[in-house]
Length: 306
Image 1: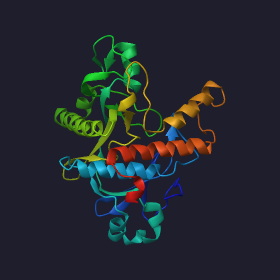
Image 2: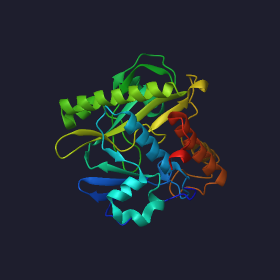
Image 3: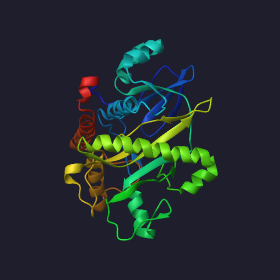
Image 4: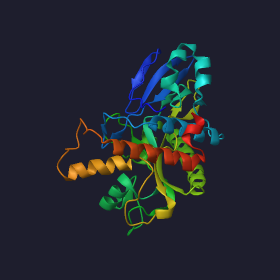
């Protein structure tokens, strides 16, 4: 796992290639998700991969899927030997699969990101500063950046393959999917967030917000899919340095964003593709931050599961 993987190439039909993951047809109503080590910032995918990033996303998602046993999901296994045992054609691709592959049930994804916010940050803070609302609903006046909300709020968004997801109201989800489905997405998203938040709090991490995806099987079941409570899908803040009224340090690609922000302020990068060449120390610091999030949340080092 010391060699970073920018792009997988497996002897299976490729369904799509996203910013981070490749999705392969695995037969019998199954798909194989492979998380590369690609990293994006400011909606630009960098040329340099971040070692072990894909393994962190996959193994941390697997940890949560196994822990959230009461939540129906698409997860089957992230064990490379079990995956190869079920798909013998992958026997020669073990190096690409180790740590970063997940076999899941195939579903039809819902057309919304199911975002849950427990703190006022990111685009939620931007909306509040502009209109005093979050997801179109008014919040109390005088709130600070990064302040904890009285109750977590379901804040859905449209999906975007490129560029930013766009926040929408709950009413928009109801209009698109119907009241019953919208209500189920909201209640299950809030429940999974609460379970993750409470667990992480005991590990010294604040989960400020997160986004979930759900998909429906052919027989109509709604399953939790994709990645769950990872540094790419969530804001993880160290609890011991939390202070409302400012942005918070986080366990994700912050070293990369900070470095790129410096280039933009200096006029050395215009924020558009292609991204600048990343120094080795920025890549290493970003990898370390992802691995630390995994260690704190699971209580084990990533190397122990690879």
